[in-house]
Image (cartoon, rainbow over all chains, first blue to last red; front, side, top):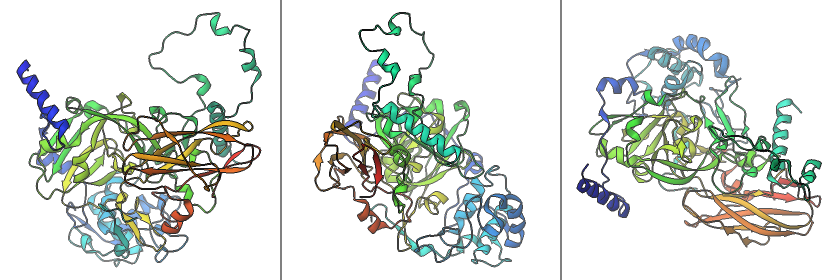
Amino acid sequence: MSTRELACAALVLVAAGCAAPARVETPNLGRPATAAEIAGWDISVGPDGVGLPAGSGTALKGAAVYEQKCQACHGAKGAGQPNDRLAGGHGTLASKTPVRTIGSYWPYATTVFDYVRRSMPYTQPQSLSDDEVYAVTAYLLQLNGIIGEADEMNAQTLPKVTMPNRGNFVIVYPRRGR
Amino acid sequence: MDGTRRRFLGRALAALAASGLLTRRTNDAAAAEPPDVPASMKSPGAGFNDYGMPAKYESKVTRTLGRSQPGTTGSGAIRTPLEALEGTITPSGLHFERSHSGVPDIDPAKHRLLIHGMVRRPLVFTVDALLRYPMVSRVHFIECAGNSQLLYQPTPPTLTAGQTHGLVSCSEWTGVPLRLLLEEAGVERGGTWMLAEGADAAAMSRSIPMAKALDDALLALFQNGERLRPENGYPVRLFLPGWEGNMSVKWLRRLKVVPAPIMTKDETSRYTDLQADGKALMFTYPMEVKSLITHPSHGMTLAGAGLYQISGLAWSGEGTIRSVEVSSDGGRSWLAATLTEPVLPRALTRFRLPWRWDGGATVLKSRAIDDAGNVQPEREKFIAEHGTNAIFHCNAIQAWSVAATGEVKHVYA
């Protein structure tokens, strides 16, 4: 870089210090990401179902996955122990001893799929197939009485599941409501 | 008393001894007094170290581990020993840690950051590339949303200041303003949120408002002058000044610009604040104004009546600390403490006040006020407003009782 270019870059930096949105010169060192690269990494699923993969599962199939992969930490039928309880607790949130489970607390069914796929089983995250994640998600919803044991969960049906506690969240951003 | 609890108390006592508040002289100390010349002056000292460590006499000043989730070793939190520290910067080795599935071992040469979603140019960055971008340095605290949650309990925890409130630490963070990278990628109209995801085994993820990302968010690469510690996000973490700690996603590998929140597990089932009526507050991002007295504090014993300096920490995720008031009579009267310069926005602020203890039983409290006018509430008022189920975002006033014996304890008063 010549002295003149250096001076120009410095001027841009000075300007940036005066006003927030002013443009700072940056080196453009990111390389373009390909669609295949993005597809390999993009595992997030929104409440509208965007990001849900192909595949499907039912609670009937999910029970076997759960018993094999989840039960050691979360107990039979999501009863909890040694780790978090996943089922029941309905109607306890306003009591002195609230029980927060998928059924009593979680506002979106898509979150179950997203979280199980990215983080579970604890010792082998991202090891389940998409069909297995759909199936275990269906099982957890069925344990909580939200869907039936033969209801198929897939990219179309899962976002349509209404969670019982959905209406009890108060979004305070950007205004502090507390 | 089980072994864990015993070790816990042993460490706490050692930390108190190191803090100087337990002033009983030992025979060893007496031996260094004049007129004897100390042994350290009669032979050459030790040589040099590649990487310096604290004095061996301070080896008991350590973090306190809460319990990791059953069957796990890295899913939990470890707390900063606030009562054993002074000033405002937390040594990196004592910075608190909250991890959701352990600390990943990431080779920076193999780490990549992907920016995609509603952008004109999806981009992949290496860590070496990030290191060439214009950087800024800022001193900020980071606080876990669940810090101080023991104050929701019906009885005061019999734990030190750090064991109760040590999920807050303060560092100088250096990194690239996130805005610069988002400008290169070109955020499309309607891209009002951003999913941030870590490269840990939890693939920890949170939705971040684009307004914050474009305002003061950093891609932090350095902490207190050196590269990030592994447990604090090496080689690169998101840093959102003032906001609940888990949103500053560690080991950052992916930013996806989206039109609405993704509603991840950690912004729905966790880090939402259940109120007494069963409703839950969601997206409670800034950490509220808070303070606590660290000297003296629970577990210490004052060595008789006389002059002491009350010292403590104050901070607010919603601005700069404007004042801290201290009461030495249980809240009947308050005096303004001196704030130690520099007083920085969204940074730990040290307050100090001389206090002449008359030897009688009393209660000490501190109350912080920030420049947005937020006032730290009394615990009774806080609980009346929020109930006891929220787990997160507790900023109630901390009270310490001082007995005539000099013993300092946590009380609700």
